[in-house]
Length: 164
Image (cartoon, rainbow, N blue to C red; front, side, top):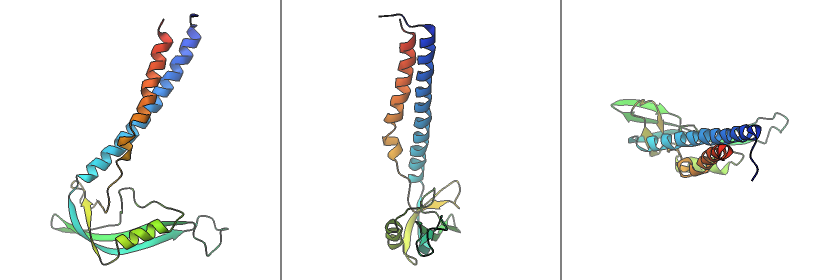
């Protein structure tokens, strides 16, 4: 086996460090998302009264046509009592409702949370003005192994570059 030149070793080290850095950054982001979802699941649940529930539409492109919306999302407003104070929130999830090109998903949520009904919402004990109807997905925590492969692989490339 031929001896590697110093230039080749430095090149492999840089590639390995870039792989490891990308893996570390994505692992941290996914862990942070998983941790936030776990924290929300521990918030106390209280009854909340749904005041408004509707499908909101938007048009991004004015040339699209007046009768064709381009995006839909679920819009909600509800009130709840926490620590003997009344609060209102408009958050379906912590990050809000996402826009979709399909109206069906938003319609389904309007049917699940109709105006005038009572649902359970989770309230942040640190900031009672913050409440959500549904928690976040824990999927990033279950997929954490994937970016960790890049981290470990990148470290392996660096070690391999300098091994005799």
